[in-house]
Amino acid sequence: LAKTTQPISMDSYEGQEVNITCSHNNIATNDYITWYQQFPSQGPRFIIQGYKTKVTNEVASLFIPADRKSSTLSLPRVSLSDTAVYYCLVGSLYSGGGADGLTFGKGTHLIIQP
Amino acid sequence: DTGVSQNPRHKITKRGQNVTFRCDPISEHNRLYWYRQTLGQGPEFLTYFQNEAQLEKSRLLSDRFSAERPKGSFSTLEIQRTEQGDSAMYLCASSLALDNEQYFGPGTRLTVT
Image (cartoon, rainbow over all chains, first blue to last red; front, side, top):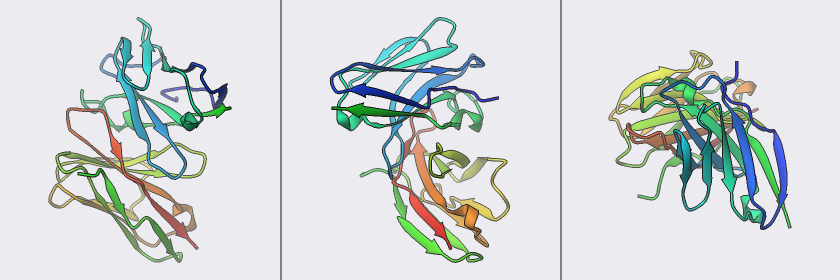
């Protein structure tokens, strides 16, 4: 049973806000939610991490409802350079979780058009 | 420190040969991870170390694969008797033990002919 489910692809336009939702119905109490971005021929890059409610940093926001069974990555005012694959991970080695928290899945291929 | 480095960046080998990849993590990071990624798929966890101890290995990691981190700094991943199905990007990442944020290297692309 997959730990996370994301849309395979999404399209948007420059200047728009993009929201990518990840479902994780079986999230455990100690699990964190982490999002990575990956460009072709590069390793993934950490975007944001959260446990509950809302987290914001300089590049994105992460919204987590009270039941924590889903999360939404929000990218404000996207540009062409935000075209990439976005991965949602659920788990935590920090709090004693196993490596199944390191399952990237297929991610969401976000395409930004002019 | 400029981040995680991996060498070589590209490797072409013939089926049946052995190959070894090296990863140099960020110096203060005590955790080091190896992943494999094929086209169109996300990175697939292979194994990870905390300092020199190998703490977990994926069930998908066959006995032809071995990883070491002898002094708790750099790591090597060796594939023996390579097969065409081993062709992939091999990614290394590092992190602090008390942190889920992983920093990835650029990867080593392996092509087995």
